[in-house]
Length: 110
Image (cartoon, rainbow, N blue to C red; front, side, top):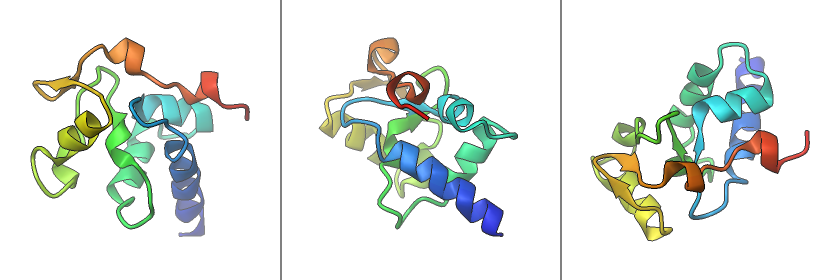
């Protein structure tokens, strides 16, 4: 269980650095952290992130789709949180995804 907590906290530390108004992906975080099970492990961490002061709404799938929206307590909460930060969302997808994308491998030094 300690190993799980360690990688969860590693994921949370990366997500906490995603700037307001930007998004990142499960896969980008997994690549940055060299996680063996990749994006799936990041998803598990995001599913458990409530109460850890993590802006989980800024993590989307590789096409910019709000794939984790059902974990926010309502079908539009994730979208509303992003829109409150200036990220436009249409049909559960981030508009101008490539310009809003924040890649930790490019933005952070290991």
